[in-house]
Structure formats: structure tokens, C-alpha cells
Length: 504
Image (cartoon, rainbow, N blue to C red):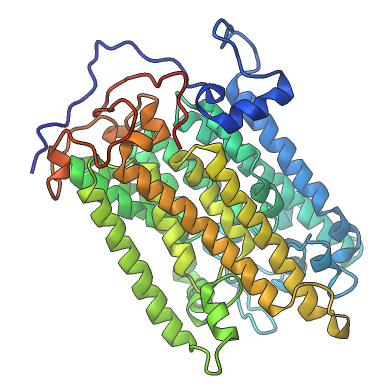
């Protein structure tokens, strides 16, 4: 049913200027003292070569380089000598180990050529396999195997650095009035620490580019990029769920249809050739995901380690699926009952976080999936840094636990109960950020993006659009979900935030 109180922005309103984070975020203001303090009222902005997108991209590359330095102890010895040194130095990476372990050193073709050992085929989605194969082509296949593995990691690191820069630039461009929010991505410590553990940055970069395309009202391009991202990692397909609900509420079915069609076609173009000519290899990713038991980082592992009869893999698969479906239904209900239609980035963050929280495994690099979505959903330094601190604690916890389990009688590292506390910290940090985002949806006055005068800058055709369908009565009332000492922000309005904004 239509909402009579939903109105679009007036075309006669002047375009507001960019949001200055040092004026609305106390942590950003305090941090700016390191470079001379907040910009003054009379500062000439936009007149320098150092535009936000260039600064953020360079900072992202610089932080990525620091992450490479952090892996240096493993590059020289930890990956090759001693079972536990790569864990005690917290510099583990899958990349050099899988160079030989998945047949790239022998010139085997992923999905087509069978491997020796427990893993018969490459256990990654097709586009990630292509990325790995291209890196293998660029790796010198001469010298010792250690020399080749070092080169393979370095080649992959160079390609992943490009992905990191793309992610930072896309986040800057998605929220046009909030370009400096991109620094949250660029300076995220967990981002730098986990960027070269695996190949997740490829899917993250394609997803960030898809979000940018949707914000520019290019629905088909969004779908194509999201389909490619799903061909690299499974989680990006989850974004179609919140988009469906938001387009339902706004009546934008044609745009959702174009996005869905683009995603399906792009995914099929990548996958069908391998499905047709190497079906056993293509299925390996899905078989491995289904058959994999309870693993690191999940609350399921805490249960299994503290139970005399740990849950079976089939039980965990069933219950985890049920839990995540219930979470998705709750998020859909939140989107349809909310006093204002939630922003796309908010729901995207929630669905991916729900998948992570209920999954039977949480590898430390999975934090990369959430970083750009978290920045777009809740661009507030305090909350972001609280969450990042929890993720860094987990990053250290898992390596110290593996050091403990691989060091024999020396027991160097973190025992089982200590690792369980690290898992709990990771889960608590993610739940905390989810709770803040849900609060912003129920109390739009606390959403820092909307308090700056925007509606849904990452929403594309949803930005400022009137509601066509809404459940409950909250969407039809001018009353806010909760009282708050700030100005109301109606749909699509451009009310500037007060200069002394100190909202949480």
C-alpha cells in the first residue's frame, strides 16, 4: 500500500556540499590533529590535486604494503621451515602452500586435471580459479619450489593490491557526499592483516564495484558485476535478497529484474564452460562446502570442543541453514516494517554478517567481506574501530591457537579455552555492529548518513523514491520510531546536519 508521507527531493533544492568528517565525528576530529587538525570554515576544498579519491587510494595501497611487510618473516622462512613459526609470527597465507598443493607448480589446469591427495580438484569457485591460474602464468617456473612459491605469492599480492585500490575507490565514489569515509576502508587494520591470506579480495572488489554501479542507477551493470563476484565467491549473491525487499517496498521491479538478469547471465557465462566440460571439478567447491565439518572461528566449534557428543556435519548444515534463513526473514521484516525504508548498504551488511555469524567456519580473511559494507552502512569511526579491534584480536587468536596445537610439547601459543574467548570476541564485535545498524534503521535520526541530509546515496533508483508497499503503520506516520534530540529527516530531504552534531 502506498505511503502518503513519502516524498521525493525537490529538484529546486541546491546540491549540498560534501560532508566533513572532522565536523561530525569526534574520533575523526581527534585523529586529524596528527595532520594539523580539522579543516576550517574558510578552507578552500576541491582546489588541490590531492582529491579524496586519490588520497584514499594511496593510503589503501600504503596500508596494503604494510600488510606485506607483516608477512615478511614467513616470506623468508615461516612458510617453508618449521611447523609453527608461520603461526607464532602471525604471517600465514594459503597462497604459497596451494601453489604446489593444487597443481599450479606442475602446470595442471584447475577443474580439468585431477589432483593427488585428499582434495581431488581445486575447491574454489571458477573465477577465483581463473585468478589463481593467471597468477601462475605470471610466475617464473624455474629454480627451487621455494623460489617459485615466493614468486607466486608476490604476483598474487600485486594483483590483490589492485583489488584493494578498487575497493577503496568504489567506496569513495558510492557515497558521493562522504568521500572521506573511504579512509575507514583504507586504514582498517584487519583489512591490511588479512588481505593476502587468500583470494577473497577479488570477490570483494567486484562487489564494491557492483555497489557503485547500483548507486549510479546502472542496474544491469550492477547485476553483471554481482554475478561475476558470485562466480568468485558465494557470498555476493546474498545482496540480491535485500535488494528484492527494498525494490518491493519502493515498487522498482523493473530495475530489480535487470539486476537479477545481469547477475544470472554473468554467472552462467563464467560457469557453464566448466560445468559442461569438467563437471566433477566444478562441483568440488560445493561438495567441499557441504562436507566440511565444524571448523575455526564459529560458535559451532565452541560447542563441539565443550561437548562429549559434538554435533554432526549434517546436523550443523541443517541447523545453520535454518538459522540463517530465520535471520534473513527477520531482516526482510525489518525492511518492510521500518519507519523509513532502510538504506541498501545497511541491509547488505546485515545479511552478510548474518551469514558469517551462523556459518560453520569463519576464516580470518572473511572480515574482508564486511569491511566496505560496514563503512557504507555505519560510517562512524568509533563503532568501526571497536569492531576492528575485535577482529584483530581474533586474527591474533587463531594463529596463536594453531601455534599451540602444532608446537608439540612446547605448547607455544594460545590453548583451546583462550581461542574460544577469541572467537567470542569476534562474534561479539560483529553482533555489536549489527545492533548499531539495526538501531539506525529503527531510529533514522541516529543514522549519520541521513543526519547529513541524504536519503540513500548507495540506493540508486531507491534514493528518495516514495514507498509503494509497506507493512504496519510506522511507514505512514510522521512520528519517528523513537524520540531523539535532532532534526527530523524526511524522505529525500537535504537538511544539513548541525555543526555540533555529536550523535552516537
